[in-house]
Length: 307
Image (cartoon, rainbow, N blue to C red; front, top):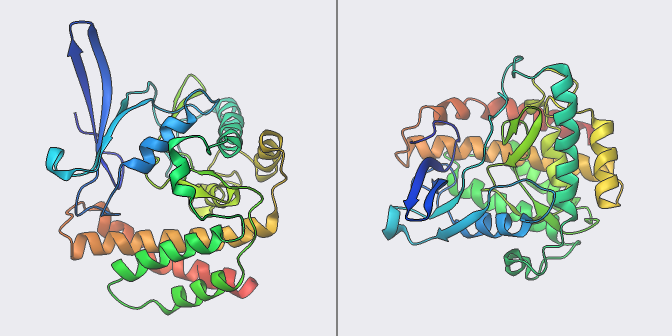
């Protein structure tokens, strides 16, 4: 069965049957013409392997390959987790106030727990070669600038201005952590008020914990509420994160990564336009995403003026 959700990888559920029994699994395939193509399944597999045994709930990974001759693209096989996804868009996400408070606390704690994991002895370690607390911000800016130059169908002067500002003002990270890359409401499963699995690790990498925090706090994910990702207050998010990591959240770093997050968001919308117009990815959500390029650029302009 193919899932309709997800804007990037194509996701299927299937049951593996053998003499010893059956097992419900998830298959994720990165299409060659998809939103973030070209894909690699290795970082997501390595991240899921690294968090096993921690307090971060995540599907157990089984196999990955970047050989597109097997299934037509890089792919990943993981356990199928139980639960449903609260609706991230609009005002009705199906959560009661008590469930929101309970899940919000777990959501904040899981992010802090993720950032506290020692990844250096894990399969993720190879992605940390040459990475330091001093250069990690610029490394990420360079990565997303390269994506912009690959996917942009026309110039966007505001993004050139933003990239210049980000290059001129990189913060020093308090530590190098596993960064989920898209940590927000809509990317986890829950059962009866308990988070059962954090999903959608395709943007995972090593970086500054403030990057995930800033992304979680973007207005785009608040649904018109004062709560970060419609779940938890900024103060509670920061406090719970500090308890889990032993490091206080730095508002200046969050401000930097808020602007960086808007670069990511704008480039993602630009990639959607490219995937649809040039790469033949006929998912009608792609042109819908592209309509958000201009609003994101206006938001960037306002924050740059304030900066």
